[in-house]
Image (tube, rainbow, N blue to C red; front, side, top):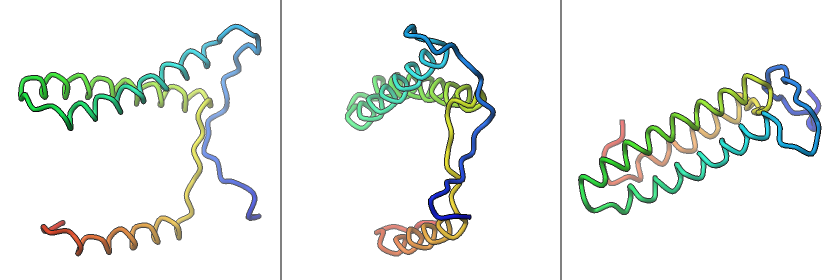
Length: 111
């Protein structure tokens, strides 16, 4: 494969009207972006929560928000509006070896 060619994984794209008004793809993309932002914010709140009851409530909301984000991602991918690049096997193996080597630097045992 030529070096400048990417190996995209994408479903056939569902066509939407190309007009100045927001279309279905724009709305779902906006929702996905919002959910990503919210999960990030809830993650920070979880790290900072000192009250156990508050922590549990935020954890529940975080999980619901994360699930919603994943469902929106799946919808975008299914409609061909979100593509991902397939990683080369050698790059995956190299990254695995690199990060596996970090295990012995932890002060506790990692399985």
